[in-house]
Length: 171
Image 1 (tube, one colour):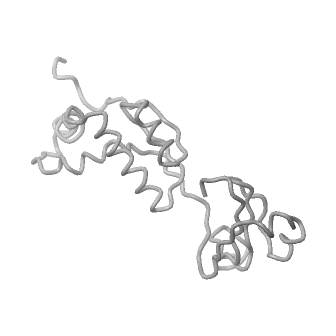
Image 2 (image 1 turned 60 degrees about the vertical axis):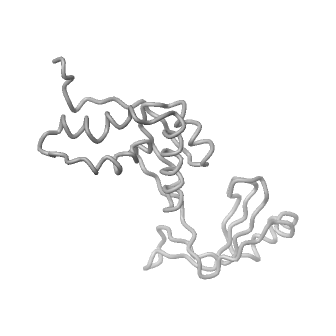
Image 3 (image 1 turned 180 degrees about the vertical axis):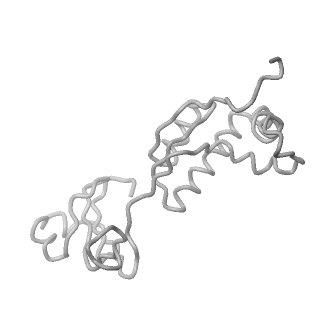
């Protein structure tokens, strides 16, 4: 939910840790104030506590739908999607230095800032599609990655990416 409307998610099934045997809590609703969850309770209780908002909120019927917290991916390199394309090269995985150069570092040289943005955005959208709403992203281009995170809506922590798993050829 990315705009500032008030939402009422009615009759949800929650996939959360509960005292119930199956970990699913049912029949409750969620009321939001813009981007923030105000309360989770049964409809009649929410209507009493938030009468103005309850009557004007945008209603989403969540009957037979699962509502759960967004997932967190604590280690990503969204910009490395190009490595999937690099698999067309024959790689000897017993030689990690050659592997890193062939599938990671040389392909970075092929990417323009626009293609780097596009690849990272596709990865961020794919994360959202699969329920991940927060990521820690290590990248060699944090300015572009920050723009991707803002444009995609994914919450993120950005970290500079370093390569420490191979020797420089001049060593």
